[in-house]
Image (cartoon, rainbow over all chains, first blue to last red; front, side):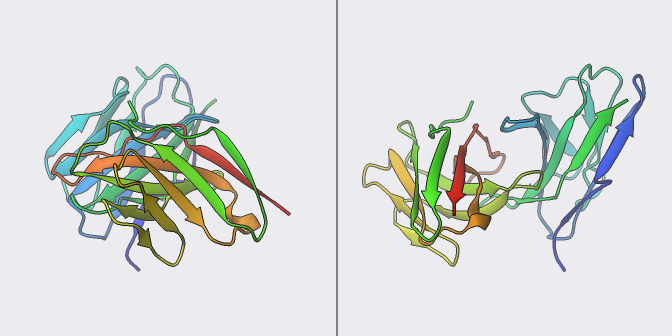
Length: 111
Length: 111
């Protein structure tokens, strides 16, 4: 089935560690996005990519990094520079003139 | 920043129509209105989108005012499973355009 897959669903990180969240899509979408959601809040854009090997910072990019080496994949690394990484992370993909499809999210907790 | 304004919460009786308003007074002529919903701890789900004309699909109807400064999402027969946060978004259909989420409306469908 076509769709967008995030893994893992739950992730625990020790302070000072980098972690990478996976996002894969088989929808042949050019654009991919990463959002962060804190409890009771809306979604905030971290990074987005409109095409392979190109990506742009969103509103809250500090402490995060991404890569877009393949059209299907857009991994997000939460670095130790992110001071408050505990949150719900959502990945999405779209084409330029239609809706975005979202994954089911990764819940990251710092322990 | 989100270019839309929505009430923070609404209640609706089960079986009745749920009418969710959205103000987008600064919308440009080529910006589309999108609606998503998010059930707790899941990824947002696309509902419907439109430009000028009213739209209907199997999930909902979208009514856009003639001046396009506001819209209403209608769930014709709300069920308990429609309890969610509903987001209204405006977006150009151009390369590089993102989906900017505001805080949305928390709809509670009551038995």
